[in-house]
Length: 78
Figure 1 (tube, rainbow, N blue to C red):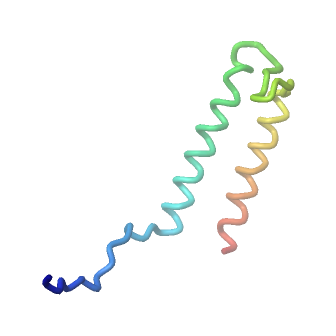
Figure 2: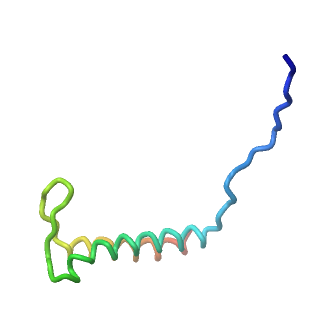
């Protein structure tokens, strides 16, 4: 049985800059926000959640918009 040398090199994903991370997060959040707004575009104010409860669409959109604003404001401070 021969000994095999194992390379000490590690391969990892390339590092993303903070701007790239912010933009990726923002795009993903906006996609989720778009999916949440679909029932409202159809004229429906409520939809059924996974567990069967009613979800008020404008409230979800308000929460998502607040998260977007908070992330944008706090991003510059880091």
